[in-house]
Length: 174
Image (cartoon, rainbow, N blue to C red; front, top):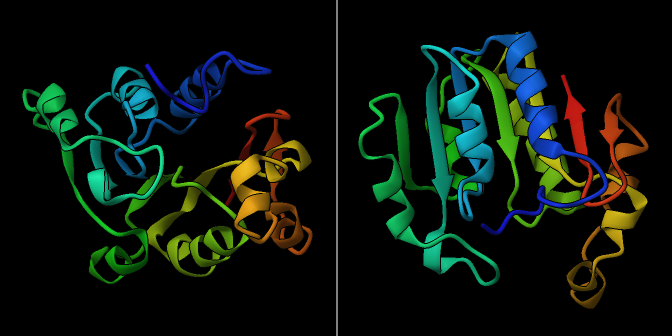
């Protein structure tokens, strides 16, 4: 299984499990599926939780999910997987609804800023925004430099957050 969270500097699955244990979420929103590592972790560590997951599937220019991933979850009535653009989906989502929003879509500083400015209002007051990346090491990945992407650390310098791990790292914002 491909995931930026597997076999790295810490067990990111355990981190997501811990968040589920402490938050006991009823509604989770996720952008970026790839092979569904985080989606499976959320599914296996929640009870009576509605999970919406969106991806660009084969339309994504990079390491993306295949639309067939939907078939793996067809028997779970609490999981909805659909095509959805992170930048456009915001307008159709309810405010103050989600306990957890997880974003893992080739994150860079601009994605972080958009998530911070737009998706935080979709969280319940005690909700948590989880974003892949945030460390200095993560900002040094080849594609971030090659495509001159805005470093995540530049954005994070101005907001309250916690970044865990060095690579790929995960950032938590409430």
